[in-house]
Length: 378
Image (cartoon, rainbow, N blue to C red; front, side, top):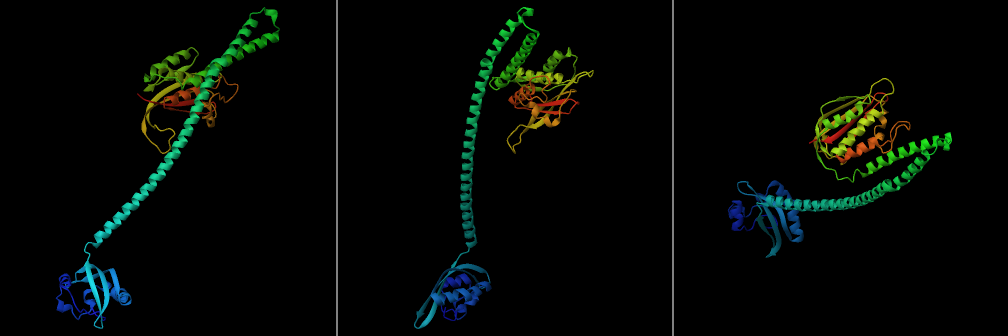
């Protein structure tokens, strides 16, 4: 092509590519082969680039055939002076699959970016996992320390506290066997107080020992029909003037001794806090099967399975419902003059949790209390 952008020579491949004969192109301007957009690009960029720097490489343009079919090409150009005339030599390299190549390149780039992103995410997950493992190790260490302390405390309860209590009882028994006039009235009153206090302390030590040894027991698990269990417990209290309303109960999975102790504590609690006066004590026990989330503490985790929901309700003195969580704390008494040691519901809660269940309370002052227990069914 000359300096006026007119074709001087065209090779056979150019003719084959464009559908023109050589004599149809020679003397014609470059515009005949360019689309409108490529024509503007040629005039504003390619031609000035070649005249200034004598070359241009791998520039993308679209040429058109005689039938106006667009063909994407890569253009290379070089300017040379021949016999005093400036000539520009062009080569066109068709790139029919350019779009496909670009997509492949973009896809490869995206895949590489995704791989890097996944790698970053894996690194972050690994860091979080390491932090979680470190935290878990710390918690396990604390738990082990806690278990060791509980074992030591259990030994203290079993021996160190029982031994001085036995001696107190022995000495109190010796004084009690003395002649009636050996002690003053004040001494006899004090001796009676010592007997009551030692009996209360013995009960407390026994309950504490039971509470802190629950987790260490290797309990036998079996299917348990709760109906006869509750009926046997109710017969123990019918002689005390307590009326029972027992509904059909489902079969659960658990340790028979533990669940018997659980419902004995719940019934005993209902009887213990009955109304004062002529109102007969009434204990109602009913049960049904409900769907419940088996995850108790893990956030945003759900696995609904069937549980037995057992309710033990009474018409006793009740308590302020705002204290419904406090009643399950160990040695927690809502009023110092109420009977018991404050361990019944704490022991009940621990038995239920050992069975992978849940327990809750609802109450109102003067209107009784309802205890709800969730236990896995058979």
